[in-house]
Image (cartoon, rainbow, N blue to C red):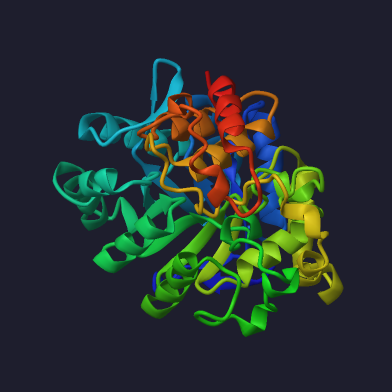
Length: 381
């Protein structure tokens, strides 16, 4: 296992990390997963989950080597009435955070992540007033070592980085989320990793600016959703019309500036071992660029790549975010609580669509957006 410095925190994290959200089985199964991860050199684990069962399983899993783990705990994820929600109510946040410490069996987290900030209004709540006071006191007391933030939005991430408060980001990073709309030549969409520079790639300019800013300011990034919820691993679901391997997706993320670790979720030991096999992969096995450059020309047709060119919606729907969450939800047998929570947090939901079709001519890929909004509304109903 190779290790990277996480920004300016002084912490070294394994290139392949552990996202703990799938530890829904027995404590013994969790122990098996975490023990194997430790054997393979994985040393960083994220715990955004507020489900008491999952937290307890994770705590049991890390117990034998508790001091070896870099723990990324999250602040603002709470369990209410048997389901996940997020809040900035400090009374609820404090109770949930203290429960997380207790169930994991630790007295501090190396990284304290402000949980899931995806709009400007919530950003203002988090970076001012009682919530920020609470987070700052946690750091001053040593209960968290460093302050971080989780978000899917590069604009919000940039705002957070520029405050000087945030030392690390948990950010969704993969080719589908990063890529710009198709140009005349698919080969132009994605440059070789070593040629990445501002303005010289197919990366969305805001996301590219985020990566470059984090690199410049020494803000470390840990990656969530490296496989786009599994979509990139299936040719029938991939927006590129071809399947990538876990190794290629991990390599893509690790070639972004400032990225230190990729935290995939694992349901089995086999999935964990497959991800960690990245460390011994050949150059050919890691070559995502050739796969994407050779994707069929029809690979984008009718599929949302979350580029945002459909905006603005006449009803205020964030179409690209609705599609992204719907795609993630469809990868599971039932809608995960986390995805549902993110959807419910949107200001305007898919059922607000009035079928004006004003967005559809702006879509580079011919996505039937009104139809997709109907499908999403039904999915999250």
